[in-house]
Image 1 (cartoon, rainbow, N blue to C red):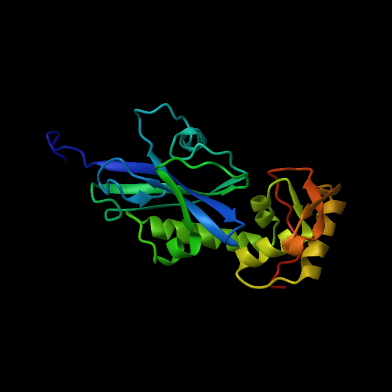
Image 2 (image 1 turned 90 degrees about the horizontal axis):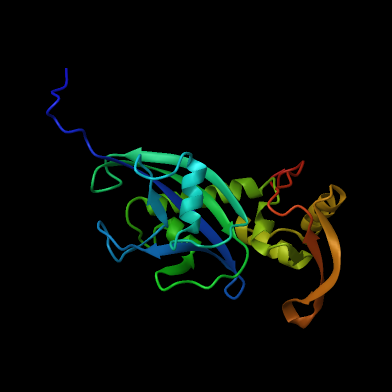
Length: 235
């Protein structure tokens, strides 16, 4: 029987967000980092996160995620959000045994960053070349894996482009997310299926594309909704 005078072991649970953004200037995916105020790892760059415990107002994980999204650590509208998983052990946080429920989020609109925020290349973080505290490199890698696997059979990469985009932009973002060239004909077939299903329609507008040529655009009729294709890119 446990001695009642023995203090209970400390434990922390956090909510962490892997917020991804498509940088058109560098043609790369980037991930949002927040500079930490407190120890451990004060002044280090890390994934934005918050602690969840009995002293906060959250009643559900969704409440906690929304509290983090509204906080200065993020404070951005998100085009997509999904839970990736939960990890935990006695080593990831130097203070105590801890766990984290972490999420993949996609930002489609340009946002002005605060001084304590920055975007860095996702590949550098997921590979560990850009070192983060705790196990945040692992969380970013798992979020990247989820993005890639789900993009094989869904319209998820289009979330990076906002509600209006051109077919060439769709080819570019799918190739970038899947980390290999994607055929134009394959993407156009998928966009056609989405249009037939009521997810997209021609906007009647054009935008400047690569080389300065105007490109016809499509607009989303169901923002925030995924379309699941009947065939994977691996089929």
